Length: 193
View (tube, rainbow, N blue to C red):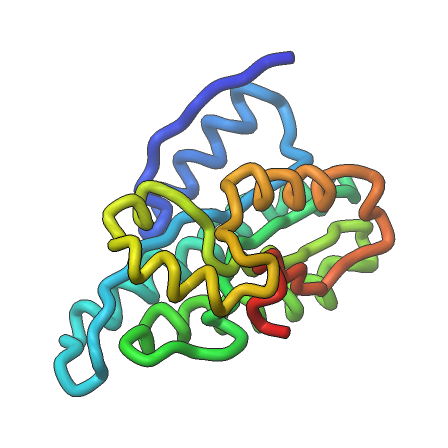
């Protein structure tokens, strides 16, 4: 097995093109694409700057377009592939103070469904993973009261782990999901229920 890490600002199309060329040169082809770039710049709409709105959409949504576009030709050539886009339950239900983040994550869902329709006849699958509250570095500084409030809103009474998301991605990347495309797999401990 050959593994290599790459660093790239995928919000810029030219950078995504350079990255795609490097990956194909290094590996010869691509089978799986996971789009997981994301940032937050939370604020109420009243206080949100145009720059903060646009930057979140650029990183979270435009990067998905950029990476899918630059690898599309390889997927089409291989007549096979799995595109996995990471969204959020906020892209399904919205959240006060996150209009930019919600819009970007909802856009990922719509984009993914459209790509599933466009590329499905070539055996290229496109799906979304929509995490709920996942315990990461971004949640480490939350107070105990805030965590308790979150946990109380989740039927499983706990946050998810990054491995919960990773396991769903492994499933979507594998042949076990060969008849799944255009779907949103919510991984939220029942939070949206």
